[in-house]
Image (cartoon, rainbow, N blue to C red; front, side):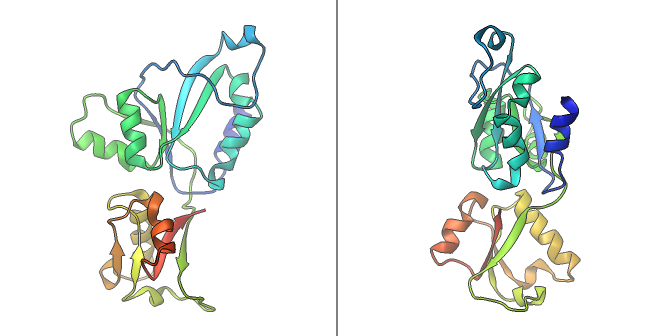
Length: 206
């Protein structure tokens, strides 16, 4: 059954999000719709998983939860949405979460800041970026050069979505300095800011 979970969670759908943990104890209970008999629940290991965002992008993990695959592996899983890698990392370091589902950059930042309890990346769940660029005006024949001179909501500075966006720009021969990338808005809030009238384009996650 472990191979079954691996096949579900490692589909090449997205950005290289990482599972990270500090090894803290947690006493929270599961929130899965599948509940084994009471005598079996006592044998399950409680684990709290804090995900960076709740998205169809991570559907394989949700299927595994709903189908009871974690319980079959002896895990009593609680899924919490942190709404941002920084918040996931905080929950992980404080002991509110046992595992953080976020970009690998967060653990690097924590290490460079001298965190006493080092966050360890131990599993890769996705392999490609699930980010999309959304335009305010219709574009029948979009070209990457169209972004030059425009305002783009890219997410917070140093965040994985924003770094991936700049990487793609360079791959397309565009210097990020040729457009105005707004890095003052948290990635979880860019869609709302864009709907409110900010930016010509925005980077979003499916």
